[in-house]
Image 1 (cartoon, rainbow, N blue to C red):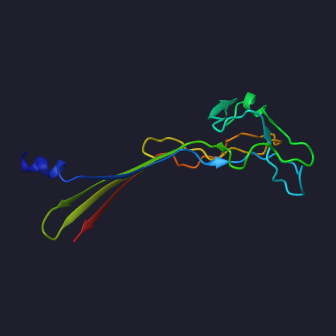
Image 2 (cartoon, helix red, strand yellow; image 1 turned 90 degrees about the vertical axis):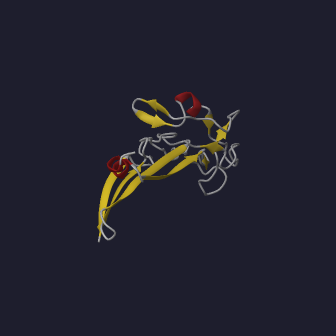
Image 3 (tube, rainbow, N blue to C red; image 1 turned 180 degrees about the horizontal axis):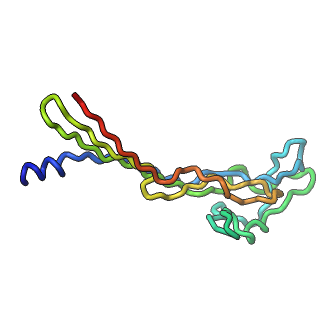
Amino acid sequence: IPKVLDYAIGGWQLSGTVFFGSGRPFTVYSGLNTFSNAVQSTANCNSCPRDLGQLIQENGTNYWFSAEQRALFSQPAPGELGNTPRNYFIGPRRFDMNMSLSKKFKFTERYSFDLRVDATNLPNVPSFGLPTATANSSVFGRIRDNVVSFSRRIQFSGKFNF
């Protein structure tokens, strides 16, 4: 390899992090104080699997439960607790990938220049938070503003060493 070409393309360093989460558990609450004065009673959902829900769009809004799935939930009777356990449902998955590319260009023994490019959320994939989990709410199952990742960001930086 010619020395000039090796100087330009050789010696680059690549580093990064990748995070993949299977989704956080969450509880669907009834929103009513059916058992005590605390509004912590879970909702009823007969024959609902633990993996109920996926990211869908209805009328331009993100939801975790479809309209048919939201209709499966009901309120417990007065004096009863709901039949869904605490942290029964699993929320949206999360994926993050951050990368850095760097190189030190040496001019002399004393002078050098460090070039670095950092990218966060490189594939530009949104990661959503948990949906609204109160069954008697008008926005039940909605994830409208609950995005827990930033859009892709790329930063260039340089440092002259002497």
